[in-house]
Image (cartoon, rainbow, N blue to C red):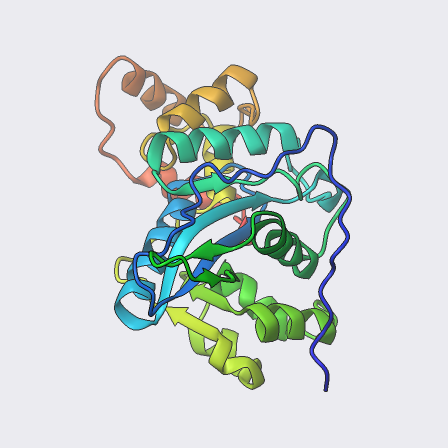
Length: 294
């Protein structure tokens, strides 16, 4: 079967410019294949776990592959995704930008997907391939030899597991994403790595599972629940992102936190530590947390 054809013509949002400020255009090693990591998601809001995924992938690539990472991108989904509770693309792009500027020296945010109608992941990867290899002209070795950059999807195992569910992804898109580009799959709590990849065996050579050495089940869903219940999210996401959320009242307190929790929240604001865990666990019993990826 012929490989799926790439999309080569793209409409851009108004005033759009591809962000390449941190893209490294010269390889350190001429024996390595240059790659760019792309994570597509809601980022509603972005958390430290999203950022950690890139660092885990970086360690894995350096220790286990012949790739060399020259850049990493967060690509927030469009408002047309219409997921319940999704704040506007403007806010999500801004939060991702604040996070990458504060916490990283190599990650970037691309707003192309966010400010268009809903785009399939396969087309988003084609967009990155076009911008980096066609518009920018790829990268070079230190001896001046030209190299095309391979675009690769970075995703959690919970997202990848949906690829094996009938009717969720088209076969052509799976072949395009996994066959043409490939993916690094970060293990997520509650989503088995083997189960997520077994039914995708035909593309196994382009799927790179990465185990979590330190388990982390922080998710945007849980963070939003914390905001709605008036609980602290300190150290779950970058401080600049917390400030931005509070300034714009993106995830307002729904007033459903038990009175004893509200009192403890006030104690924390006045500098008194809250060492109890019972109230938090009771809140999570009251409300389901939903999917972990977004």
